[in-house]
Image (cartoon, rainbow, N blue to C red):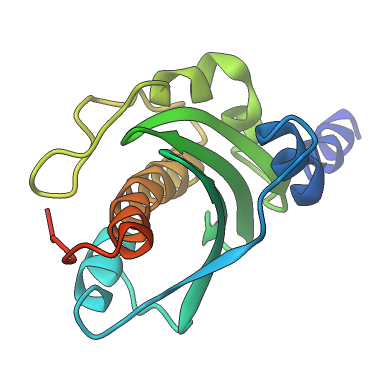
Length: 170
């Protein structure tokens, strides 16, 4: 019975996505924008995720060199909603907002997501550092690692789009 109580407690909303965006911009979030997933960037998005991406655009919030993303990826069976702030091409903050899986919720704790602080993309769209796994949470760790890579990649393209400069694929 204790195991089932722990499983139920692991699932849940840890922070509403709207509250994450408000906090990211000190209560004054900029207007939401959309990054279109064009034929040019779709292959890289799908390579990062390791599967087809069905959407046409991804919403984000940006101010200067800083952007905030609410992204989802399947852990084992259900989506994990994650908030990621990118500042000047580096992850400033990663938070699990909604966790729906039965296992792997350890990724919601600061000891895990702080590993992403300051991470950047290497030339092959991989993170510039190793992220330590968590026993029993392998698929959740993998999902958050993919989302961090995706947020960094999208930030680069959104920045170029907003700046009106040529889209450069890293």
